[in-house]
Image 1 (cartoon, helix red, strand yellow):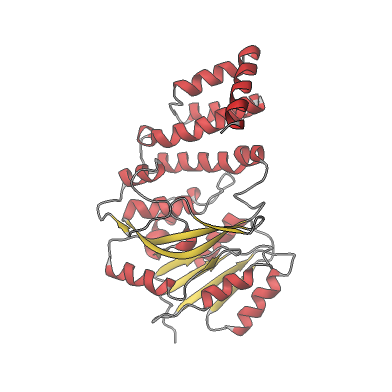
Image 2 (tube, rainbow, N blue to C red):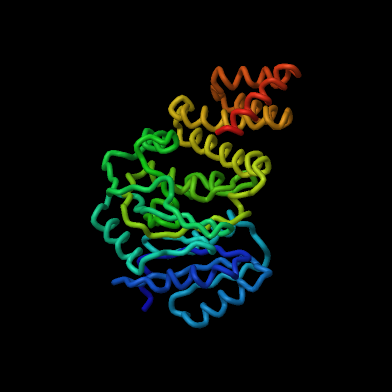
Length: 336
């Protein structure tokens, strides 16, 4: 009875009362040949989410570990506090507004991890559900055949993943990964997992795991990822999104790459793509402040921003050139 569960499933809900029942039901319906625990970090919700989590914990006391935060910790700290409480050999997670599609998701993923001891993470396909428009579609990273390259891990694999080369995209909620390797990555560099500037829990986990072993990505569809009109990683305000979450995620990624000892030149495709997006936005918005912050960060990290971005940075400071550029990009995006 004291044997630890083979898998820990992490959930960190906050103000998700309209969705959390579906999330929990999709996890508790799993049919497995092993024990698994569900570790919930309820982050002081004010909409009734906490009461629903308490209801489920009372109904499934042998399976649910409910952590009721006394204060709101914020997503990142809450997630990694729950992560450190997990006892499972393997770890999976699910957003409090997402849900799993099949009752065999965990069993299939654990079978693959057991069969391939070198694999650090097993992932699968997922669908996106647009809550506002009530639309369900396949993710842009949908694959039709299983993807597995045993040699695909280490620095080169991390760079390829960021550069959108070879490795399909993954989301953690459609995944299951090795707990000991994830914990090792966390304890080696805890500052990369938490901190004021950290906005993505999946970046350090996926990059740390990919340094240790390859991914196995299944063609099976295991998840519905709900896209809300406004959330931590989505905003209807493009200016708010790019200068906030997107820029913070970019800085977090660059710092992770530097800490892992990967040269910036290895992720040049990723850098040019992201920087180009930011620079065009500064031109359209005439945002000198954001442009200055972006340039300062790139200089600090010794990032080659590319000729196009250097030209745009220069033009932004010239009133006439800046005006012409804005007219060009507004026309371009209007007809895109």
